[in-house]
Length: 500
Image (cartoon, rainbow, N blue to C red; front, side, top):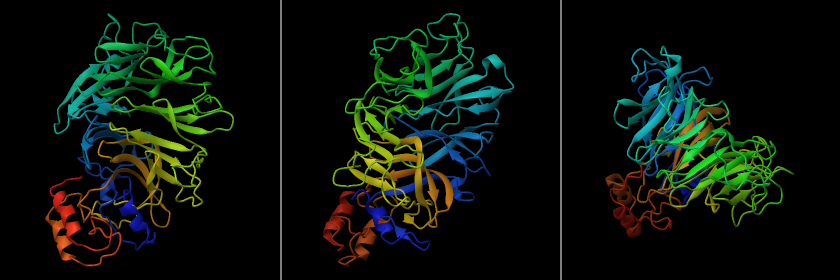
């Protein structure tokens, strides 16, 4: 049932003339795209600007508020923007090249990739400016959804909490905001500290980890080394501040120095063996490729073992997927390396324990061998599935999922999945990137507008006792192909629901 609307559409084929109507099953819709000339590519609040690329979206600890950095072109030199929103609607916060609202006379130069938002609608992002003093041009800025006011939360020349006379470095990043508005971040090259101790991880008014000083517990191979470096986008704090996840390197032997640390203790380490595997974690970038923590403290990591390169996904220290295994019970389709010789692309979870994994499989059709798995139980999305680009409730835009962007995904408590993906048309030609939202069953919705209202009631009554066929959007109750009182009761029970 979860993948019903997409499978009904695909049954008709992928020809250019296909028009597929979304029904009460999963809906895949575009929030923004980078399709040149398409209305969804327009940057909101910035006339004439179109999206070119999207970075990882970040979610609030509950509900569906989000924030992300996007680019108006496809090159590094192109202009970046910060967009924040909720559900399928976002607003422009700031863009590079505009006068900095928080610093008269200064101009926004560089916007950080990582940013954060909480359920109260408070958000934080990082920015560097031009036309100001070089030793005080790095900022953390806070704002509120629905308001244009922006406030300086931190400036480069501010004193580091707990370090009298020490000021922040020339790079402040990995910013995030907790449920109570506390800001967490990484500061690099703090002024007044030795060069091997000048990178700090900060939560509110407390430095919780210091390069060259803090020693993670539980290191393998009988050695205990202090942190040497923290990975970019490798620092996460749970919404209540009680849990911390860090990816990085410690000092010492380079064949065992990369590690993931949860609440001060090593949970994954280069050259160590994950429970259930034979070969150790590989070295270098692919060993521990990406770690990420959810707002409730659940954490995920993906990477590769040495000795054959078996890829894996770990959730809270337990492996949940690996190359060569069946993707779920009851299928012969297996996890397999994709074009980049990597099996797993992204993973995310919610506060209820659900999780999704984007991965490659051994499907014989190269246009259908990338999937999104829910709880390692079922495929809820597959490469080649159609996308409702214009949000009209029908798959009539000649746009199809072409693949998932690595590590750019989150999942909400109602089961929605937001992610960055690649699109193609029915002939296989690339269309560009997109920021998409996969919405699970909207019970009672017959027309794909994600609202159960009089239109849905009229659709049911207009087809009363009609044999509409299996898979019809009007057959809400039991998929028996007949519109009757059972279907009417479903719509009435869900009356007033807004799934959008």
